[in-house]
Length: 99
Image (cartoon, rainbow, N blue to C red):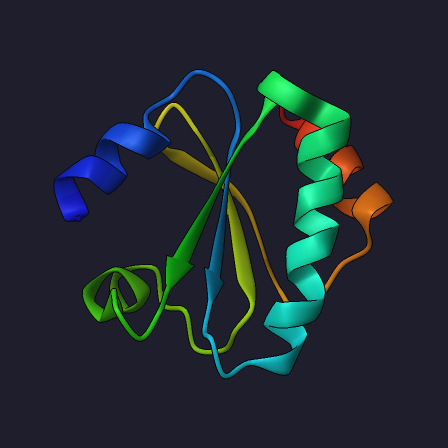
């Protein structure tokens, strides 16, 4: 997973990574919001979901202590990070500000 994750975040378009867990209530609330973000931005962003229980080394590397935690990458660099649930318009404006 690690090498493919590095390939994914080295994109020249924004990559929003959602660290989540199946047992997490707020994560379930965030999922449809991220779907709306993708519908609005289309090909301008890639959204990747990472299950922290199945990818613990990756969660440790990025110091994900709570879920959901979203990280925004572009060209392999982390540009933004936020834990918790945000509304669609907030996420869209953050992605657009880093496009």
